[in-house]
Length: 262
Image 1 (tube, rainbow, N blue to C red):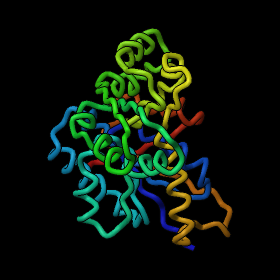
Image 2: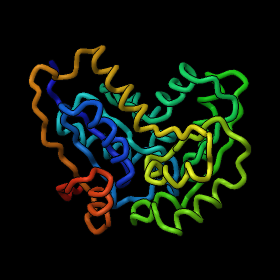
Image 3: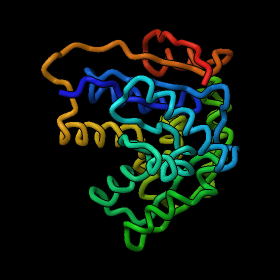
Image 4: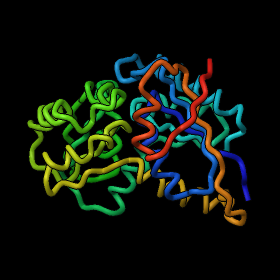
C-alpha cells in the first residue's frame, strides 16, 4: 500500500475545515498542510498572482514526496487549478468539480446559491461548472469578502458574524442549497443555517473527503494494514497571525506549527 503523505494548501486557516473532514474519513493518512498566511487573503489578488502562489505552494509540498495535493482554497481552485494540473504529474484536486459532481449525482436541485470570495465569484467558475453539467439549473452568486478575514480572527460566532451573514444572505431568493465556496465559510455554518432554514448547506470539505477516500481506495493508495495514526505536519509562511488559536478551536486540540519560507 502507498505510504506517502497527502499534501494540502490554503491561504490560511480555512483549509483546516477540509483537513478535519479528511482526517475523520482517513484517520491513518498523513497530511502535510501548508497555510500561506504571509499572502493572505487570496480573494482580492489577480488570477496570475493566484497561479504563481499556487505553483510555489505545490512545489513546496512536492518536497515531501506527496501522493496527491488538495487545493483546500476556493479562490485557488477557481483560478489556478486548470493551469497547475497541466504542469505537474501528480493528482491535484480542487473543491469545485467534486462538489458539482456530488450535486449532479445525488440531488435534483434547480436553485443553488454560492457564496465565495470576490476572486472566486468574478471568475464565474462555479456557475460555469454547474451549468455545464446540470440542465436548467439556476445559480445565484454572492461575493462575501469580509468572511475569510473574520474567520482568521476567530469572529465566527459573535454578533458581528451574525449581522454580516444576515447582510450577505438577505437578497438570495428561495434556494434548494447554498454552496460554501470558500473553505473558511464552514466556520460560519451554524449562523448561516439560522438565516437559511430548510436549505442544504454544502460544505465542500465533506465532499472532498468522500471523493478522496473513494479515489485513493480505487487506486489502492490507502495504507490500511498498518493501523497507526501518523503525525501530521502544519507549515505557515507567516506565524504572526491568529492561526493557532483558530486552529485549536476547529480541531479541538492543540496544533504545532512550523514557520517556512517558500
